[in-house]
Amino acid sequence: MTRSAPKAGVIGWPVEHSLSPLIHRHWLQRHRLEGTYDLLPVAPDDIGAYLQHFCEHGLAGANVTVPHKETACRIAGKVSDLARRLGAANTLWLEDGELAADNTDVHGFVANLDERASGWDDGKTALIIGAGGAARAVIAGLADRGFDRIVIANRTLERATALLGWFAGEPAQLSAAPLDRADTFLAGADLIVNTTSAGLAGAAPLALDWSSAQATAIATDIVYVPLITPFLAGAAQAGLTHVDGLGMLLHQAAPGFRKWFGVMPDIDEELRSFVLAALAERH
Ligand SMILES: NC(=O)c1ccc[n+]([C@@H]2O[C@H](COP(=O)([O-])OP(=O)(O)OC[C@H]3O[C@@H](n4cnc5c(N)ncnc54)[C@H](OP(=O)(O)O)[C@@H]3O)[C@@H](O)[C@H]2O)c1
Image (cartoon, rainbow, N blue to C red; front, side, top):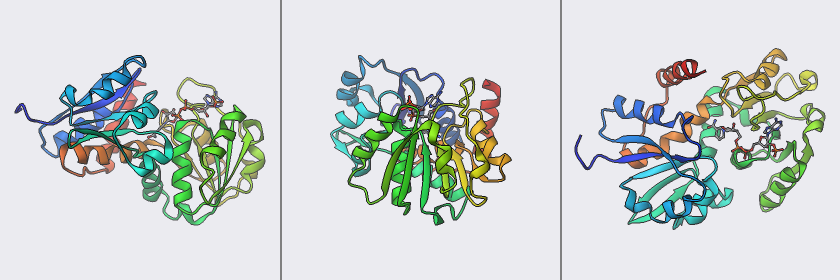
């Protein structure tokens, strides 16, 4: 490999669990490109200085994951309108020596549904469970695709209410509810999205009563470990179309790869099977 091969990686804390190196290294190999993609663990106390001196690390760019997405958005010199709208960035690159930032989670969320549940945006009413960082990307994606009534149900009601303020300028009508009232909004929802880490392998699942959901409703989870979360299993049992969260991860990764390595990578069944096999080995 020549010394000029582009280097990228994923910045997070902790970051060892990240699947991003697996995905980007697969693409590098598949597209026969020179380059590297590594784990970049940076502690919360160090992230400010790390990003301020980004051009000294020899990187073409990086992904940013929990808990640094907000800091990355604050520190980058050039921030896309979308990242600014979400207050969070997950993709960084250098532009004329300056740190530039974007958010590709919205693209990942929407592209996954476009691919696996065509017509998912025919409906106009959505129930989002969870009000963390990822919920912001989901809200933006739904608003952009014409959903005009969005209920956000969260364990900590204040966090859901705070999102109403954050998105106050959006045309969609947003409302907040406590998690234990989520069931009451199921009947009116065309799309039901889980963004909570409840149901993540090892965590207690959400207790939802799917019996009132419309038969035509679509359920999607952005958590992909396990691939079929208890949330998706409940939706499947109720006969609903359901979409897992792995595609969101794959699609959000692609724009960064193109920026750093110059090729728009393939997102296909081969990649999906490769990542699923790696996940099965890990869990
Ligand atoms: N597929 C993808 O590409 C993708 C992209 C981004 C994120 N994700 C995944 O999405 C999940 C959420 O990410 P995030 O950044 O939004 O995290 P976050 O900011 O920490 O928010 C976590 C959310 O989960 C809720 N929650 C956690 N444990 C819960 C429980 N036991 N019962 C009910 N609610 C619970 C929290 O509720 P409280 O507010 O009450 O604490 C909050 O709404 C993570 O698992 C992450 O890996 C996937």
